[in-house]
Structure formats: C-alpha cells, structure tokens
Image (cartoon, rainbow, N blue to C red; front, side, top):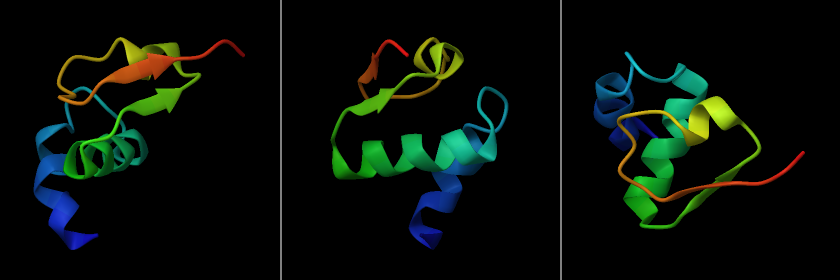
Length: 55
C-alpha cells in the first residue's frame, strides 16, 4: 500500500483520497477501473481506463 502513496498524493487535487487509492491501484496493476461514480469517471488526472456503469 505504501507504494501507492506517491501517486495518491499526486491525485489529491482532483480526487478524494479514497478514490485516489483505487485509481493508483488500477494504474499500478494496469487494469481498468469500473465505477458507478460519474465524478470519478470524469476526473482529470487518472491514467488508467475508467468505465462508468449505470446505477
């Protein structure tokens, strides 16, 4: 988890810490992130693919 902290810190202006951890993990694992959170899906900063699903 501590390996994700630098990336989480970089994302602090566009995401909550909670969301930034998920984004950092997806980027590290090179996998897409699936979410129902439209704000997260539209955020600037994440480098991973983010797929928005309907609620």
